Amino acid sequence: MDRESSHESQYRALLDEAKRLNDAGRYEEALQAAEKAYDLFRDSFPKNYSALMQKKRGLAGLGRGAEAETVGRLIKELVMKDQMLRATAEARDKNIVTDRKKDLP
Image (tube, rainbow, N blue to C red; front, side, top):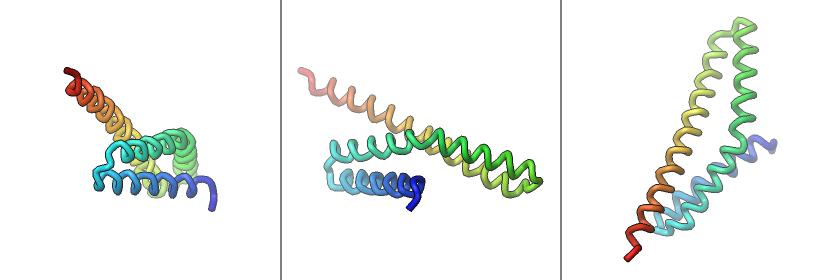
């Protein structure tokens, strides 16, 4: 298994684990699994983005516009996933702060 597919399988396994823990009411553990998944995605994002942009430019340069467009959609999906994960992390951080404020006397 190459490194990229290994990262992808680890990422998916962590997300599945986070969902399972969340469904079981084990929220703190679910949060930790989701954070690990986000860290893994974030660490590989620049490399994936750069490689896809190179591929898109190469295909467009060869006159293979339809394939370049498909790669462009993959890039857009990757960027959207990154933005969604960042927004989720920010919302989670705000909720944790709000929850802790509620606990204060």
